[in-house]
Image 1 (cartoon, rainbow, N blue to C red):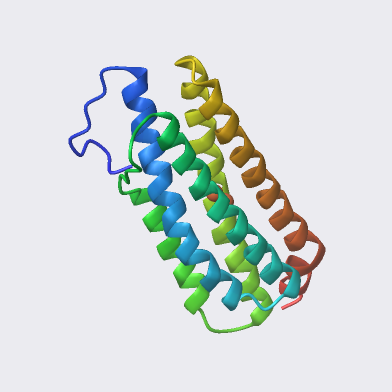
Image 2: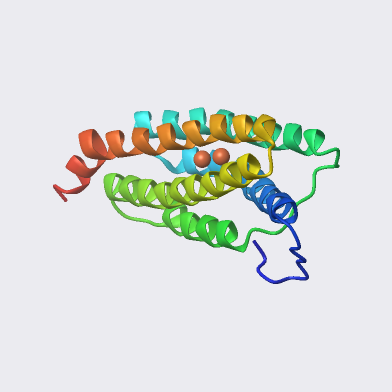
Length: 170
Ligand SMILES: [Fe+2]
Ligand SMILES: [Fe+2]
């Protein structure tokens, strides 16, 4: 969220809308970043994980658009400075030179920071949705949250079973 950039929060509904606008910006940015992560990955399982999560991320954008519809609003983006920064750090891993396994480990580390950030954001948004009685929105947010957690677990599995084993031998 572009913190304190003219945000007026008088109710939990205001806060919920602001969080959705932040997530919508973050997810939209990720749909551009993930193809580059996939292209940079050398390990085939890692590349596939990024490609699979790109498709899921496109679904996350759609779910947020559904939520805007439920709220009776047009989709709106609030610049997510944190995601901009996380993606910039991911770019450092993408552009790094050196050993391909170590670079893959760096890509995973960058990607897991993103997933944990998303898990945190969706956890809060879901909680706010429940609090204001928007169980319809909460259900959509929970579906995305489950996919973020699964993506994070998949990255851990690829790191521990393959990439870190090879990178650790360097
Ligand atoms: Fe996502
Ligand atoms: Fe994600």
